[in-house]
Amino acid sequence: MTTCVIVGGSGVMGTAALQAFREHFGSEAKIVANWFAKAPSDEPIEGADVTIFGDITSEDCLAKIESAAGKKFDYLFYATALGAVGFPIKDSTQEQIDQSNQLSFLPLLSLEERFDVGTLVGYSTFYKTRHQLGSYGAMGYSKEAIEKWALESGKSKHACIRAGLFESFSSRGIKLLLRKTFRDNKAMADPLIHSYFENGTTSEGVDKFIAGIVAEERELFGDSPTVAQNLKDAHLKMFKTEDPCFVNVCGAKIWLSKEPQLLEAPQG
Image (cartoon, rainbow, N blue to C red):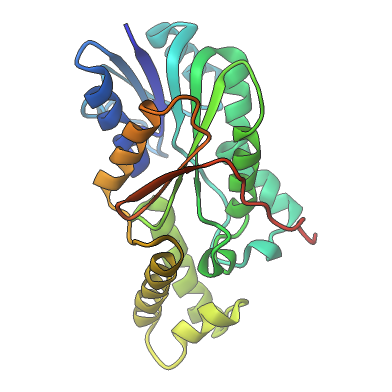
């Protein structure tokens, strides 16, 4: 029986992984999905055989995953992240980067060590585009860490799905923080981002920001924005590719690559 574990199974990317896995491997495949929120819940994730509510960094959660999926399984999708966003990546402090890595990157390493996973999948974005450089904050360095990891040899095969703009908890958080920053300070650290918020409401500023991302991605990659079906298709592409490294998806365009996106070292 082909088995996978999805960390962050209730999110947009986790849902795409779940649906693609079920479509590719069939109804007999086993899917164990994990999710976590501040309020405890027993709500199941649609399409999963087993839903585990809990913090992936806790021993209790890991023990439940092992009980449900075993010590050895075929795929693990790490589709969760948390970190400071809404300001230029280059302005991130080392403390902010370390905090972001606590959930956004380091669990990949501990999960690989604890379990015998055939393929371990992380997620990234196009954080070196002009708009992402000005707004993605400390998460940019966590995504860079994932991309470097994707090239490393380990107990498991490593793969990374790199996606363009799509509506998610993270993207909503960036928009809210940009609005709050402008309301509080009447200024943005990045001049391009700041230009969107001048001479208008913060809501209009966010709309211009999103339009700017879409225009840049279309110019650079050929399509934007990215929707749920595109994310699912990227996972299906990965399943059909022998030893994929980066599976890129931006809009309906999907392509393979092997080069990481490297950032300058943080200043502080």
